[in-house]
Length: 257
Image: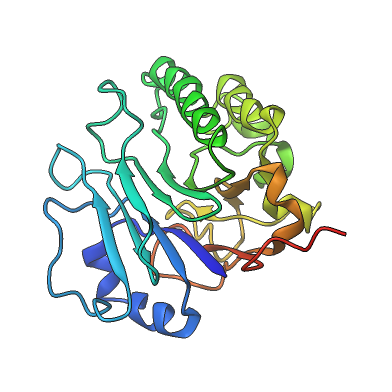
């Protein structure tokens, strides 16, 4: 089963670029999109025959928003995390399947002046509590734009960004909590080195120079470890300031021996 996550930085814009070609080439079973920036759900979509579409749009028009495309209909899809303080910005979609949940998330940005950092800290705390509640039922796969580079390996210039939004101690501790709880950073199961990024500034030719940040992730419950076959970043795929990330898992749990 192939899962893809991509912050598309505006779905209408990327549909005019390479999105449909990418979808056709990759044929994911589950495709999680962040920052769709829609004011209303798109109808008469070109993938309607192949995918079921689910949406969580922000109350503010043209802001944030998430979408989920899935070949097989989930058991159910839930918007938000059940807390009014967080659920007006369209940041979370949860799809339940037979043996796991898939949670599509677009984590709030702390802003350049860090004015939203206190809210971000509350978000991290409450979102982890939401995931812990889900794990009491079945394992989770969490993917999306987490708006944080976890370690110095995850951005090109860590020393120069120690007080920058996306790499503050508070944000990194928030992400640490997910890992300490037992969620696996699936990309790090296969790659321990630096130089692997998912977002690049649109200034200073940053992408061509690979001056980037790894802020898009697939996390998974530890109980799914034996089913994880591959976790990759696709930096050659353009169209957004982010690139897609992928997860390949086996269809069924391994037999008990």
